[in-house]
Length: 346
Ligand SMILES: [Zn+2]
Image (cartoon, rainbow, N blue to C red; front, top):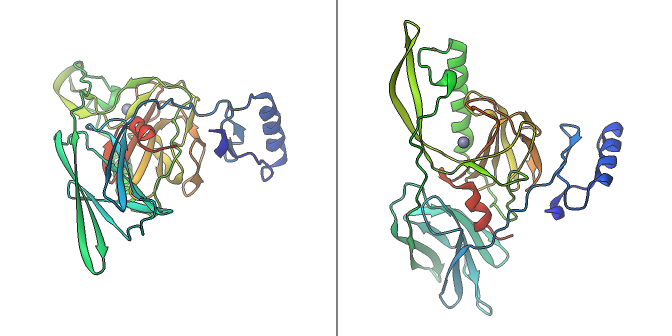
């Protein structure tokens, strides 16, 4: 997405800006990444424009407005984009409220329309789902009801337990300062992810890498080895079972990582499990999370745009090899991050 790339380098230190200017000239149009003033180097490649070819769409016409839903597919673990669209010539509806399966969906005004995103949880029961739109008309409440079907997703299951090195060895009792660090990380995450800042994620949504190759898909069932040491030998315990809360994308150490959408960086620090960790708040309870980074290219509090370089692929924290783990949460529910690119129109 060249259109949202920062072109000006005028506020950078002279030596950095002249180096960047040189690099910019050498790169073909469309291949540029975001210029990053914090790191003082320019990324070589732009975010991969993931080809969104097929998505599913549902629409209901209710006279003065239309309700439109859009998703990669209406199945478990997908993000769903919703638009309440004013019909031509109609007065438009005022301050509507939206619910999906009894849960409030955050919507924001966009011109005459309203837009929002909700999650079909990965563990949500497939079948008929209800959307209710509430509106006030001349002092009385009108409820509009909509129904659609959610399909099952065949999430991958890994039969073999994964050895996580020192994390699998429960005989290694972390020293008190590490325990305190883990607790401090958890407290920070709780505080940040409870926030519901104003604003709504709008397009475009970019790929977080410059190449698309998934090494571990969303909600894959993974077992982790657990053992304790007895007389120098491993005594295996029942493996712990986890669902993979994001996607792992292939990348070598130092490869660029890009913000999936515009928002504010709310975490940019090293954490115990996540390693070098970035979280971006996209507004209305939508967050994207980037883990195991080698380096952080942005600071907490900074506003970033879709496709901006935020860090580099690494293997820090609970990670066995260099890769990028990306998660997306909508109102506390994990969805497949890739599904967000299909849901939000460009
Ligand atoms: Zn992962």
